[in-house]
Length: 358
Ligand code: GDP
Image 1 (cartoon, rainbow, N blue to C red):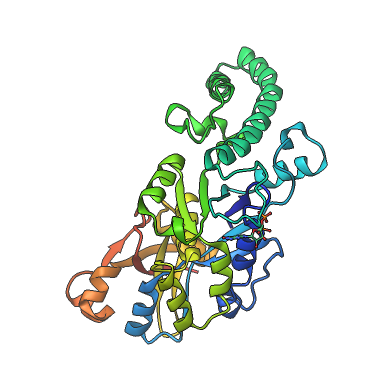
Image 2: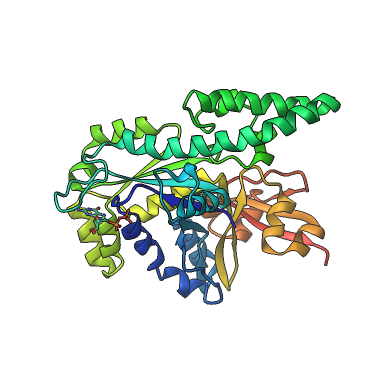
């Protein structure tokens, strides 16, 4: 499954956040047979629709979709110079599908900031610089090969042009993610470049920042078009120790409508380009993860590969229509349940039953 790699400078709260991500036992309760790697934190994607479906269908349990975060250890500054832990750091990032950078915006005289002061843009710069340098190295190695190929094979010319264009962007100090509108990312795919990966920023904040709309807006604009999530990593860790009522009180006391991990799960899901569809029955109400733009047979394949191969059709009703009708039978007689074929592109919140041959 797709993962987001957590990176950041020392002392920004990565471990604190990662501990919160891994001590989330909602998951081990729901997925008792899942083997979870020690450096992977799996967070459920909050989805109130599942509880409603469970009520309508009398389901015994709900199974939310999940988002996986990988803790990326190793040095940041100087990583592109390639020694030991720096190499490992870059190799681990290469394996992740998106990059989640934690940036410190909390004030605490007891916690030393590596660069001496809180400066979000400088934190971003530091990570970006290492990744940009690593990508430039990759391109410097690849370009002679691409040039040679383009000389003998005309159809390789676009790939060479894309790589040269990417080099120009990186030489200008920009990430490929930030230049995505100018680039043909598909042609660069095989180079497995780092700065092409989608970014997500987590601002590890204190109450002052969390409740300061203007400051949040300013920080969100700093990282746009990437998603920004604001949370207090220390509070997130505490929330997991509390019962629902005390957790609610703690959140209210810092002016937050929901745990930061919920927002982080949503943003992670969005950054990875994923969406869900829903199934429901007496056993379970469940959200399934698919890429945005997936077709009905591809969606069926997430449940079981046989479902994709033997796909006949999908019976689809939108969540809103189903809830309005009150039951599947009522939705059917109201004409709200559509029969969709193999070219149907799934919409978020489709409630589906697949018909297939085995
Ligand atoms: P890492 O080096 O990025 O993994 O950072 P850690 O998670 O080890 O955190 C460094 C220090 O900052 C620890 O003493 C944490 O307790 C503290 N810390 C982490 N998050 C917060 C926060 O949101 N607020 C405050 N005040 N301290 C934090």
